[in-house]
Image (tube, rainbow, N blue to C red; front, side, top):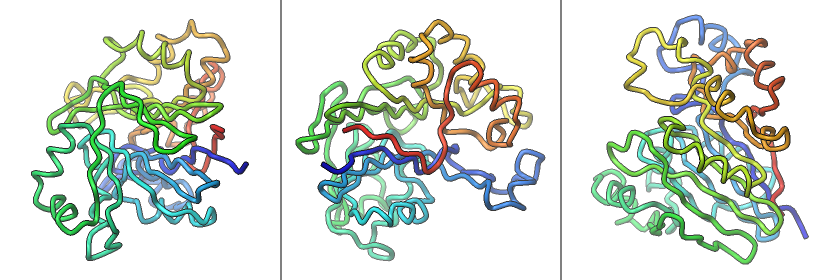
Length: 285
């Protein structure tokens, strides 16, 4: 049997790295060096047996991210969307007549996310033109997408101006993964995450900020995310095996880890946690 695996397509926050119009120290070197650029957070679930893949979030950089999958010879079978912040759904516009003109690609959404798409004139056109077909998800309701893979959506606390926010469990025959790129804090979710760690093998979790002192020009209270430093403190009692399962992702352009700060990077690794990198693969069969 061929592999079924997770492929990391992006690890940055919605705007990618470097960030648009940012000429501060955090992005200066990145503008000069394309090798350190990072795409917004996204995963692909690749099933080589069926020559299909599914996207988890569809970013504004989806053109380049789909290109990353070319060598696998697979076709797009669907998209799962976590929430209605632009880095997580705006790539859908590429499915329209002007670009790909896709034929009823399944797009899996929670109820408020579905309402948002159906009531957004630009996105509704994709439905009316049969470019996409919305498939409703229910929280904590396991959905088989074929005989080898099931998906479970679970709600998380986040800024839900336009939709609810979910994470996804991707459940294979032998292993399972979690994609949880956005959450406001662990305050009301800490026990839930520990349970997710216990029953899954790989977890991609919100690592937007290494430390909130990175943010100088905006009110940090309006962009709540857990600090990586705080996350590591909270989950310091996990076993070494379980710590290693946690892969931080969704890095803001200010994040010291993106900026090649070896002290920050090494601190995460030395404390037993992991860092997501674009191009990583994780088998789940």
